[in-house]
Structures are given as C-alpha cells and as structure tokens.
Image (cartoon, rainbow, N blue to C red; front, side, top):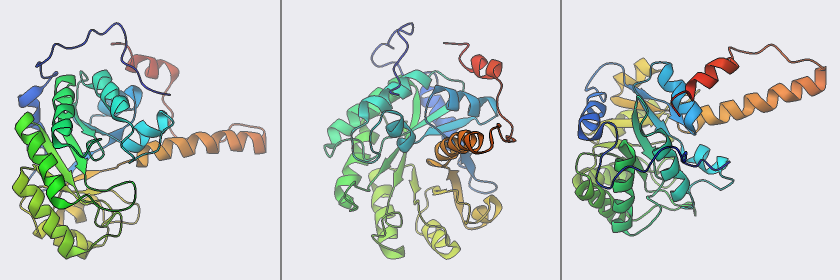
Length: 284
C-alpha cells in the first residue's frame, strides 16, 4: 500500500520548516549524548507505527526504507521510492516527535537533487536524514561523491542533522581501515553523525567509534552487544532499521498460520486494541 498525504491537510508553504525546524534539530542533536545510554531510535514505516512509537514515549522516531518500499510493492535500496518517502514524511512530519528520514542514497547521484530532497523533507517536518553509500548492485558509492551529497545537503539546510551511513560492513566491502577512511571523509563534508550498520563485533564497534569524533550509530542486533555495552564501546545512537517492520510482518503470518493449523487463534503478546489504534489517527 502506497502511503498518500491526506487531502484534508493542505501543503505547507515553501520555505516553512515543519513543526520543529532548527530548534527541533538542536533537540535531536542533544539526544546524541557524549556518554551514558545511547539514543534509542526506533524506525517506523507508516503513520500508525510512528504514532504508536511516539505514544510509547520515544521522543525521536526514524523511518525504515525497507518498510516504506515494501509497503509500496517496491524493492529497497534501488532509488525508486523518493515519492513514497516524501509522502510519508509529509504525513507524519507534524507528529509530536522528532523525525529522521531514511533516504537511501538520496535517490540520485546528483548532489543538487539530493539537496532538493533535503529541503522538501525539512519543509515536511524532518529534523534529520540518514544518507547511505551502499548501492543496489552491492558496491559502494565513491567516497568523494557521497561526501559531495553530504556537503550539498549541509549547504541547502544547514541545521538538518545528517547521519552519514557507510555500508562497508553491511556489504562486506571493507573493514576497519576503509570504514575509518570513509567516516573521516564524511565528517569533513559536514556530517553530524555516522552510521555503520552490520558491525556487531565489539572490537569493530570500538574501532569505528575511535575513528571519529562524531556520534556513532549502529544497528541493534539480537546477537550483538546490549545497550549498556554499546555505550561502553562508544556508541551514541542505536537504531532498529527494518527490524520492527519485519517482526510485525512475521507475527501477522505466524498468527494466521497457527489459526489455519490448529483451528484457534494462538496466545498473543500484548496487542493494541481497536480503539487505541483509532486514537492514533484521531488528529487526521
């Protein structure tokens, strides 16, 4: 299902920076604490998931490109969901939470086009973006090109929090040395934070943290270190990527499969009531 902006909500005038704007981005930066428990950033894929996470007390919510793409019937990471990503930001950007948007590689190799998207997302209410250097073919964007994208976004919306992601570990295209080199290039280009998904080994995490002065973001992993240990290793932000979306999808299939097999609805974990989900959409 492709998410569309409700017709009852008029478009925001050009140049108006969402619900939070620069002050929201400053709050978002402050959540990346220099020590202590890292910022836990859950990732939503539609209005209901974002609203539910905010209602659970999460001050900041990210989006997951896989969830957005899959909901639209499209593959993730192929640069085909610019419109869907922008629609979702416009739908949830006025929420009572700080929004960071996953924009894959910016949906373009033209830094000016990536900067245009950043402006549109800021106008929609986003206070941050996640910009990755991985490509659909399993290769990495040349570091100079990715750095140029970061610099273009920084120039277009100076206050927007740019989380620069390198997929060296995710795609198996490099280890500590190449990761450190890319993190340095992205920091020089103006990134506010760096993201190294796929690294779960404590030594690799600690090396990535030591390679940069910027807040380090890693993915939560069932077989990775706990939050407290990640904090000790120098991590300042932990996101869940597509995990919540995949958990929800798996739970739905498991539930109906069990009903088909056993003839009864199986015991379920805590499930939101119909009324509580209705309440999530009360403002629309």
